[in-house]
Amino acid sequence: MSDIRVLSVASEVYPIVKTGGLADVAGALPAALTAHGIATRTLLPGYPEVLKALPAASELLHWGDFFGGPVRLLAASPDGLDLFAIDAPHLFARPGNPYLGPDGRDWPDNGVRFAALSRMAAEIGFGIVPSFVPDIVHAHDWQAGLAPAFLHYDHRRRPGTVMTIHNMAYQGKFPYEMLASIGLPPESFNIHGVEYWGAVSYLKAGLQFSDRITAVSPTYAREIQSDEGGMGLGGLLRERSNVLSGILNGIDISVWNPESDSRIAYRYSEQDLPFRAANKAALQRQLGLDPAPDALLLGVISRLSWQKGLDILLHAVPAILGEDMQLALLGSGDAELQDRYQAAARAHAGRIAVVIGYDEDLAHLIQAGADALVVPSRFEPCGLTQLCALRYGAVPIVSRVGGLDDTVVDAGEGSAATGFKFGPVTPDHLATALRRASLAFHDKPVWRKLQQNGMTTDVSWRNRAGQYAALYRDIVASRRA
Image (tube, rainbow, N blue to C red):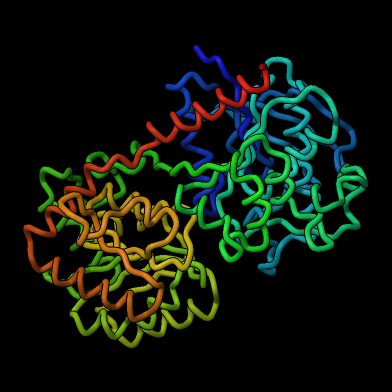
């Protein structure tokens, strides 16, 4: 029996619409919360793929004018995921990426589009859907950041609020002139409101007005309180440090399970690790890599960007080749990095393979077939690929930042080691970590122990969901006091 109701507000939810880890969290956390007595409904925009996934949706309300056009609020529960969707064609009936137009740039009305998401969240928070009046409105990232502000400035009895930061680098900054059109009062535009260097910051709004703030790992929660890590909002986070906490992300271990994964060539567990070799051979064949069972095969599944440190990995290519390693990369992003990786693959055919884009099947096969997974991020709020790697016995090689530092135990740190960490984040330090991994790989008992430690690490949502449940209960109790 659920005793607390939570409205989760997100711009993407796996498996319906996904561009990054936010979707995975928004999709998996609600189910994990059920075991802790928390009933969650997730509000998301009615993009075409969302409406397509909700053919049996019921209409809860209809308004003739909502941020410039008609809107319907729909409800459905596809595959057990309880959803509200905002069917507003003038805002969301656009194909492709949820945030970017055909030219690869942000939609010019993104400020209005995601203000509408937050405004609907606030209306649900105030009870516009009598069958689901939430105790908590939980906003994820800047796209939902105005929800706590709308709830604050309406001066009505409101639910508790939580703001989760998935990545400080994306802050949702828009011109001051749109303040009135999105429905915020003039008095909101000040340093203690939504104002940020003469503009409106949706992320700042959420951080300023939420009852509690969470970051997606304890280390990231500390890092963002610095001036550098806070990216302009460190002072505000230091000021609100008494309500800021870090809760690690988990992964859906029913989706990421090497014992039952239909996307990989051969299923296995930590008890039969030699069967991973079949996945390695399949990955090498699929990507055109040399069939070399004794070569350390490095996997990368990442956005190609400065944040993810993929330029640093390029500088480590001589070390990779010098140690007779192979590299299998799946990702997309910065056009220059894409070109440089493709050039490296052409220059070193059989040793380096690059697939530009995203392929869920290939992502699973890389986790199951790569010997190690490399995540050289300059900053990383949590990271999910290294959690999947632990689950699949792909030994993580990661930088000592954010959630990477929280989730991987370095091979020099004792018998519970699960991978290799390096810092500072430079090409030389990454190359050193790769050489350490190469030495360990050729010592089979040592490598097997790293794999088994990783595969028996709890990377699920079970305990992490319990931390969110405790947070929600504390907010509800304090508001009732």
